[in-house]
Every structure is written in C-alpha cells, then in structure tokens.
Length: 436
Image (cartoon, rainbow, N blue to C red; front, side, top):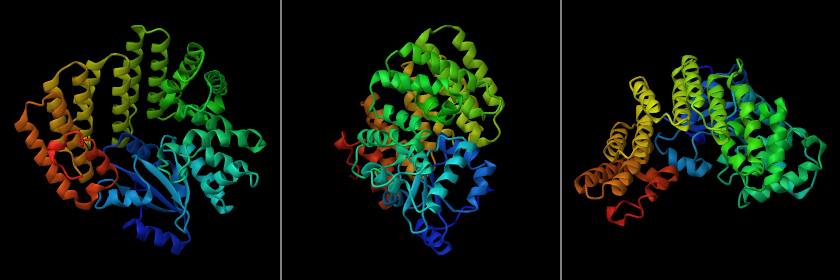
C-alpha cells in the first residue's frame, strides 16, 4: 500500500484537510484479518491506475481496531469490512464503491465517480433526480448508481427507503433512458438479489448476461459472489446454472485475470456443476484450481484471500479434510492466523468434534489482536461454549471474565457499531451480566 499516500490523523482532520485542499476524500474502512480487505489491498490499492487516481484525492484509512474507530464508524455509517467511500470536499458523500471489483474495474468506477462529482452531481443527487423524474440523468450518473455499493450503504444513500422498491423504481426510470443501457444489467442484477424480480425475468436476465462477454465481465463480481443466490431466484434453474458454469469456466482459465478472481470463478464453476451433476471429477477440478491459485500468490495480502477462497472451494467440493490441512499449513505464515482458526472450528463442527470446535475458538480468541477483533472473537468463543458445553461452568466463567476485560479496554467504543452488535448476540444469556 506504499504507492498510495494515506493521511495520518483523525477522520475529522482528514475531512478538514480535504476541504482546505478542495480535494475529494477517499475513505477505506477495514480490518487486518478481513479477507475482502486483504483483496482490496492486493488487487485494488496495488493497481497502477488506482494509484494514479489517488493523487487527485486525500486518502484515509480507518482500521476497525484503532482507538475510537467503532464510535467514529457510527457517525460515518460504516459497518461492513471493507467499506469504500468517496466524499466531496464539503463532507457530503459522492458515492460508495464496491470492494469486489478488480483493480481495472475499480479504477474505471472511481474515475467515473470523480467525473460525476466534477459535473456537480453525486449518487444522492442522481438517485433523487431519477426517482422524481425531475431531469434526465447522464450516462455517467446511471453508471454511478449501477456501481453503487448497495451492500455497504447503511442508509447513507437509501435513507428510510427500502432497497427492493428503490431498485425497481430506478429500473423503471432507466428503462426509458437510452443512456442507461450499460447500467441496466447491473441494476437488474441488484434488483434480482433484492428479490424484486420475477423468476422468469431473472432467468432471462442471467442468460443474457452470461451470453455477452463484456456485460458478464462488467458484472463478474456479482456473478462470482452471488451465483448460487441468483440461480435460486430464477426459473429454468438448470439452464441458468449451465450458462453460469460455462462462463465461470472461461474466467477460471483466463490468463489476464488475477488469481483471486480466477479462484472465485473456479468456485462458481464448481457450485454450478454440483447443482447440475455432482461427480468425482469435481475433486480433481478443486485440487487443480487451488494449487494453481496458491502458486500464483503475489503477496501476503493476496495469499490470505486465496487461502480463504480455497477453503470455501474445497468445502464446496466435499473435501473438508483437505481444507483443514490447507488451513493448518498456512497458520504459521499468516499475519492473522486467528482468523483461519474460526474456519478450523467450523470444519470441526461439521464433523461433530465438539472438543476441537471449542479448542479452536478458544485459541482464536486468545491469539486475536485488536480491541474490536477481540470482542468479536470473544463473543464467538463464549456463545459456542454456552451452546455446546453449558456444563463447563469454570471455562464459561473464564471466558466471560476475559471478555469483560476486553469490553473495559475498549471503553466507550464497546457500545458502538460492530462491538455493540457482537455483544448483543449474548443478550439471550442475561445471567452473563455483560454491559448492555
């Protein structure tokens, strides 16, 4: 991340500096252990076009484990790791950008957002104009809305609006606008995921997207990450699954794609193949794709992401033992091994090994680093103890005391955003007497 200059100081100071310099502010919210965050660092922040655009911006990264980060996140409407926000110099949001894009696609979306801002608009302005039909939107504004990160919105753009009807209203407005042609497929995919589309219309959409190389490539992130969900929302599932499988197979073997995207495509290919005709050949495919991806790892950030996707792919193929061996082999070299210990606990849970489940959760908690991370890992360990070993009162009390210490160390930050959400998970055990 050295090629991007990151502002040092508080978010308030960063916004003030952006205003003084009359530069947009680019905010990255993330955590060291988060696989998508590691992918962002390796695939987006390392891309030369993104680095070039960053020179027009004041860039600021807010780590979820930094002092007061969760309280600040509440003020800025940040929750999911990672969230990428572009602010105007006056502090208003221009847009939120998807973290799943590759570097090339992200650079194009960021350049487009800056152009929309230079023209005096934003995602909020464009959305209001589209919903009220007060004026025609430019092609760039339609693309800005299509590329908006609806998953990390937190009400920043939607406000009190519900997602599905908002997307439907956008589609109704965009269908009549010739400039919306390139944006429509992505808006339609978002609408389908929000279950705002009929099954037959969803099938027609996915088949059309898969048949068009450029459109499919522009929406590779949605197809790779939500392929199963999309197919389940469609009619003609076998036909749609076959089209997705074939498109994913091309991506999985595409020399020009980065290793994480190729491996995600291989996972999609395998998922679709399982829906159609599960076979032993899937095991060979899984092993081959995982080996090729790990061999291509270019840095620790990318390797972290690849191992996480590889474990998911192997589990999808029914190769839980192989996934377990892969995780254990990478623990010594991982910069956040406690993250992978959660996956090891999950594998142990699937095979019914309660002792291993609790031991991995305990080890993960004991080695976790960072106040927000420790609260999240502590809640995970304690809740699993209560569910799986309610009679181990001494162990439960030890975990409770450790979590109380972490809550005390976090101070006021324990009452905000992700910390508050994690602690709320323990509310069904009032006997724990944890702070509300």
